[in-house]
Length: 372
Image (cartoon, rainbow, N blue to C red; front, top):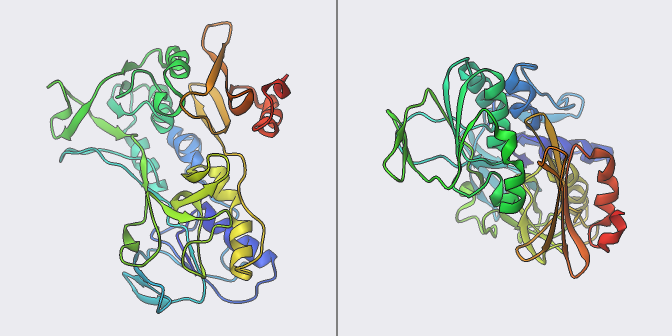
């Protein structure tokens, strides 16, 4: 049984059938549509180029019992039972792929998040010419929403707690090199939000910003609340090893909900990106088919973002204290960032440098000179 209906689930079902598994596969999904791809939601769907983003997932062909609109409420590993809002469902082996949920701002006022297809379609209707759009968080998702809102002709303000856009993910020096991209948007950094109320966004300094649309882009939390008292070990997400195994035999976790052990940092780490959800299925399937044997899954982390007409691609894991080199383009904005420690490459970020990505990905962990 798989709990969750996203990319990780779709990949898992496909891999399991490719491994000649002929048993029953049941998928419980809280959403009312089959698995779909999330990255286009903040890009092509939000801009109106597409109305959906389906994955190549055919439940009938894969012989999957897909139960849409079914929310998991609890888990009893001893009884091998998942409690749902439609009744208890038994399993022989379990895959937890419940993803993550957006963090919402305090206050009773209306606010949007962007996580589901319904979220994207609803927000798109509100990105109108002249609409006062306030985005909280100059994050990856905040930047992508700002890109779409600006293109729609909205009056866009972005509020960021840090000193620069993306500084939480990339640091102030790299974030500062992206700041010129926000031209035409009222970007307010070092700005704390207190709450969202009916009359607008209330800032910590007492200022109230009127808004027609408020979008929260301040992060997500792995969806683990339903696992309380289950015995599944969790921290921020579900703790797994490099084979996607939890502390409970016969239960694996993949995708955004999994906090996987990685040798890249020597710790359990959330890797909340498309590439992780797409590639973990092979190890998860192998673990369930043979709990004691199978391949490890610990790739070099990779993610990308499309914002302000640019493609950003990042590989590796950098840490505070890493040596940082920032290269700028002719216009003075970010072109490339390279992080290293004791001469070894820890992470690489390129802007419109897709041709250099493969070399950077294979170079992580080796000498920085390998990038030459």
